[in-house]
Amino acid sequence: MENYRGVSYETILAWAEGGIGYVQFNRPKAMNSVNITLLDEAYEVLTAYSDDPEVRVIIICGNENVFCAGADLAAAKEMNAFEAREFLDHVHRTQFAIEDNNKPVITAVRGMALGGGMEIILASDIRIVADNSTLGLPEISLGIFPGAGGTQRWPRSASICSAKLYIFTGDFFNAQEAFRMGLVNMLVPANEVMDTAAKIARKIARKSPLSLRAAKQAINNSMNVGIKAGCSAEQLAWSMMFSSEDQKEGMNAFLESRKAEFKGK
Image (cartoon, helix red, strand yellow):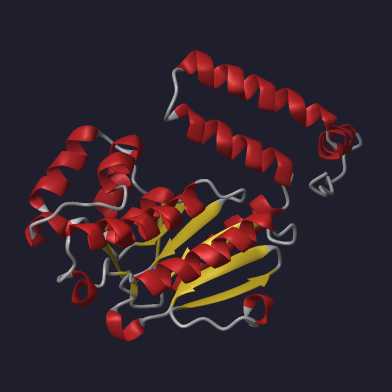
């Protein structure tokens, strides 16, 4: 495992192999809690992956014991309103670097994912979670509420009433409840999380990068526009695929009973 582009970071590990770009939170003594340094380093790497043709899929993970325990309260507790708003500028910039990334983003979750950690999951495309994980948005118990998109993305992933129940109570919930609510895609044993995420990533990485980017944008658009505007945007993006080499390769490969070799052109 080599550092991505030879850069060593303070709060994350970043490397790319086999078409997969990895971002691993690396503040184990602070339970991978989020501070501005982590946000900015993750943003830098996510943006680079988005533009790197060698990276086809991104996996975000923590360590074996914790995904991310949320905001670093030791750093946040004394912020005034203006400092809090600036902090959320960094948060949202990084969250949208996940959600709007040109590449599909998979979160591979082991251990706890609380507060901002849960909100990172909600910004991702595919969510693979250890069956013994604990999740939640406990901010209400701190005299605040989720501010990294949790109030916006949860109702778009599951129901508005489940969002209100867990945001209003701040209660934790287990991986099985997250799966039942539709917040995550798949539960696997903790020791299989990374392999499962990589297996899915490799499968996606074999698809056309152009088609993946357009499909992701079309799906995300559906959350923000009416169905007619969404279908119109989908129609335009779908038609544009027919100007690509990947579309010709994909259809010819199918008709010739062989595997397609996509180049993102």
